[in-house]
Each structure stands twice: as C-alpha cells, then as structure tokens.
Length: 482
Image (cartoon, rainbow, N blue to C red; front, side, top):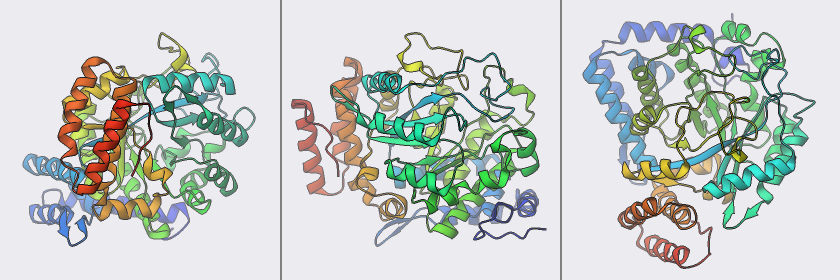
C-alpha cells in the first residue's frame, strides 16, 4: 500500500487514496464540532503584519471539516470569511479572459467530453494559422487581452509544433489598438521537453484539469487513449515546473466523482506543489459537468447543487488564500454573480467553446465542447461587474514583468498587490472603455475609475496612474504598467 507523502513525485503517494478516505472520515466525525470549526475559521482569518497581510490557509484535512459542516450560521461565516480573504489579496478586481479553441481532433475516449474519438457525428475542425489570426482579431475587437488556448489531444493533428506556431501567431497580431498580451495554455499532459518549449514560447499559465482524483473512476472515465494513464496525467504539473513553467493551474470537473473526495484531492495537489516546488498553483478552476453534443450530464450521478458548489468555492478560497480562482461561462449569470462574492477572481466573458466560433455571427453549436450558460457580450459582462462594484481587469503586467511563481506570491503576500495590480487594472479598464465599450458602459466605468484611484495607497503610484489614465483617454498611447 502506498504511503501518503506530499513531497513524493509519485501520484499515488501525493494524492493518496487512503489519506483521502481518512480525511473524509475525520471531516464527517467533526462536522458538528463547533469548537474545532471556530478554531479553523480563526486560523484562516487574515492577520495584519508589519509587511502586509498574512493568511495561513488550511490543510486539506482542516478544510474538509469546513466543507462537511452543515451548521447554517457556520456556513454563512465561511462565506463572509472567504469574501474577506479575497478582498485582502485581490481586492475588488476581476481578471477577464476568453478561451480560444484551436482543434477538436482528439484520440482519447473520455466519456464526459464530446471530443472523444468515438463521436463520429461532431464536426471536426482544426484552425489554420490564418483562421487563428481571424479569431484573434475578432477577440481583440471585443477588447480581450488574455486568452486560454484549448486543443484536443492528437499527436498527428495537434502536435506540439502546431501549438507553438499558434502561440507565435497569436502574439504577432496587432490590430488597431488590440493585442493579446498573455496566452495561457490548456493542453494535454506532455513531456518536460515540450513544457520547456511552451515556456520559451512565452506562455502565461499552463492549465490542466485533473477531471477526477479518484483513480478507479479516472480509469473508467478515460477508457482509451494516452489520457488513460492516471499517473502520467497527475504528475504533469511536476514536469511542467521542471520545464520552467512556474505558473500552473489546477482543476477538477465537479460531477464526475463525489465532491468531497475531489475537494480533498485538489487541496492535496496544491500542498504537493508547495512542498516540492515552493509555490502552489497560480489558479484553481471549478468547472461543473455540462450538457454537450452527445453528453448528458444526468448520466453522471455525482452532480452538485448551486449551494454546494458555492460552498466548495468558499472553502477553496479559505484553504488556499493566495491562489487565483476561475469560473467560466459554463455557469449562469446568477451563479457567477454569487461566486464572485465568495472567492472567484477570474472569469471568462463572451466565450465560444467551438473551434472557429468567434468569427461566426451566430454562435455555432456543432463543435462546442460544452453548452455556454452565460451568453452575454463582453461589454455586457464588464458593465455588470462594474454595477456590482468590481473592477474588470485586463492586466497582464505581472507575467510580462517576470512576476510569476513565487515572485507573484510574495507580491500578493506582502500587500504590494494594491500598489501594482490595482492601478494596472484601472489603466487596462480605461483602455477597454476608450476602445471597445458602449456609451453606457463607458460612463459607469469612468465614474468607477475615479472612485477607485483614490484607494491606491502609495501617493506617487496614484499620481502616475492618474496621469497614465488621462493619456489613454486623450491619445492612442496604450500598455502602461507597474
């Protein structure tokens, strides 16, 4: 039997099945232990220090107790604490991005994904570099600056060379005042050598969803193809970091397995990265399984309610306070609005999950990876965020200034994020308002920016940001950053 060891490089040891089962037993036994729950909430609470604000976070076992707790007033306290933690480190900024699907050719047999190899009626498509250019221009014309590229796993149709060429194409396109400044990559587990190539290509975050940490379920859900190899997939982040990528993004597909098991496994993975590499995940995503071409989510009997989903988000935020959290347009406007209050710091806007979808006037459905619930335009999403008091941020400065991995985390932990990310968010929002926004959105945005400028702690930074914002409004000067 494998022994639990967060510092091990073997999947069965750092995501240890027996440790998860013991964690779930412990959580069930203590879910009404008010004294313990209160001590955990106090431990996780932000504490002011001489260098900023400190959050200790929680272990997977401690956080599992909170997730199991069903005492209504304690659950409400978790939500309030999650919001407090998020505001302490990310403020009211919400980072904006869009997915870009390059190819839906795939050799895997994943039973929850319409791209699976046996699906013979889905429209298979792979973008040419010219088509990628057109997609990127369409995204730039909306106002996007940050993309997450997606591709099925197919060594013949989608080799690493195709991905690298596509990244080069994306970064090369300057259209009017538009530019994609950060390309995150969500592709299948690969080799250290290929991760080095991705790093050299200038990617931002490497994202790979585990789908499920339950090995037995994983093998059943991935019956054929290279993704069937649980260990190779689960150990991918270690290879990515060995290849020089220090910003990695984790995630599970909630609904495939019991959510408490997945929650514990996800946090154990984060603890493993911290123990081995000195820095945890840059982001954690929380997708739920949704209807797609030949996929019926009701076939999977582990679906979770909106209330449980929001509780998971809050408990992740409490456990890993410095990590960015992502929610996609899989979720409805109502759910996304509630999730923003309890921990989410990044959202997609105006997403199309089909290959070549952005250049189509009507949203195509014949090659979608999943149904999109929130179908609003980027302008509508930006206005909605601002009406709720959030700052939509198109900032990519940290990645471009080399503040990645532990350098970003130290910036986050010492509180300097307020003198860096806050003004960068306001300047990039001003760019969006000047170049892409509707009149109504522009009016709301300029009022919000004036109010938020006053919150920048450092007077010199505040003055420079104000001058840069004035320059953006008055001219075509763009891309100021701290």
